[in-house]
Image 1 (cartoon, rainbow, N blue to C red):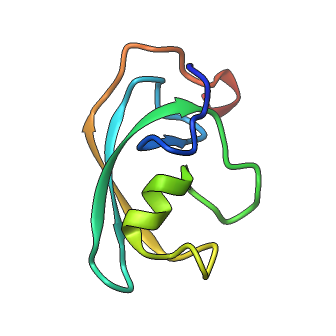
Image 2 (cartoon, rainbow, N blue to C red):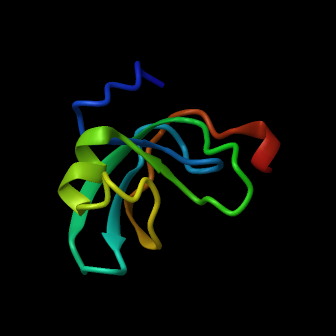
Length: 86
């Protein structure tokens, strides 16, 4: 991927190809943001995506640190897929 810049709308996902675009919706307030997958993760059981600080700020869960989300694929990137996820 590319460097994980906390000030950009990027995220890490365990098995989506790099460059994929997804919409992340905070299920507590219905705020949504589109992010680009640039890294592999998260590595914490039960988590499906790690978003940048900027994405978390726009989704309004900075203080909570985590929240329940829905991830909707907008487009699949042409990047590398995490071989561990296959």
